[in-house]
Image 1 (tube, helix red, strand yellow):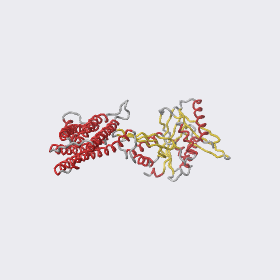
Image 2 (spheres, helix red, strand yellow):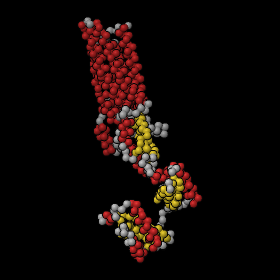
Image 3 (tube, rainbow, N blue to C red):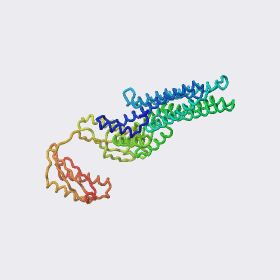
Image 4 (cartoon, rainbow, N blue to C red):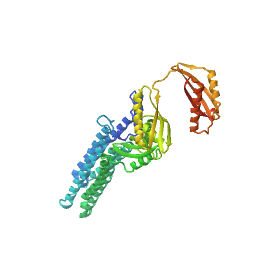
Length: 495
């Protein structure tokens, strides 16, 4: 019973001493199990002592109030044993047969306790009715009866506080049920003491109607137990039927709806097993987002749920959704993304009311032309089905590198660089070209450079200048196979 009252600091000290003596310190999960089992074990010992004393005194005095309390304590003993074993099982990790863990055993334990309490109430009410209307039993209030009841009130106060502290610390429904029982036991035992006092007063002053105080006190005890049982029954049945905690679903719905990038919250489901919550959500995301971005948004949604249920196990399913603001370019990309293809350089022309689309798509360079053409044909069919306003589609197939290239050499050609700088000087918007790198790859010349432009130029105009410059470079130097120009703002060169 002494270990029952240990604080977290006591257990931490034990862990530190164990480490210093060469024994590994308890992990947080092991510490939780140890504290919960210690609290439940102390409750079992106390219940054995209290039940035994009440039975002895109730039989010797004939007090229905004390006997009803003894029956109540006896069922509390059974409940305490159930709690002791359930907290030992509930904290076991998930396994192949119990993939959501073993936490439901605590909820089931609390449910069984409710049934036992209701059986107690039925017996108390029956016996009280018999004594009030059919068979009068003389009560012998004694000092032992008062001493046992007051002693039991002190023990119940101690163990309800100890159990309540651990239940709150680890959110244990089974321990909380025990703590609730023992806190009401204090009041019910007090009522029995008052009943015994009234019987003693009635006998001393010859007030006959006070002789019924004991069964009336027992009925009051039954009423208290029924009240406690009803509240506990509602909570345990809700947990066993996976009812969502009141108000939590709407809080999660509101929090996730405000995550930037989430278009809609399609589903929020919450269930509880022991002290663990499981949240299952389905959220709508822009259908054009990348897989990586979808993962980032899933993490953000999980963080939003954890802000409300810190230790919840969260599962998020992302659903592709079309935005109302999508233009035809977004819709074309969405169809390609659905096939895990990237399209670029999309051009849409309106020719006499008919839309013509031109686009570039990159495919694995190891594919044959037939395989690539089949993929593109299927892509174009999907686009025509999703975008019936399109009349014609022309797709330029490009090879996407599948291997890392190893340049044969980095070439130094000052004369070529001067020629290309002279070409760039003919473009009034180009302020400077620099950092030329010339490489020979598979017998072909690759060249790259940086091009400084005005900060205010639109991206469309920057692309036009890049394209024109690449064409002019290849015209002036036909030996170039690939030209890559990196644009940068003038402010970047002033740092």
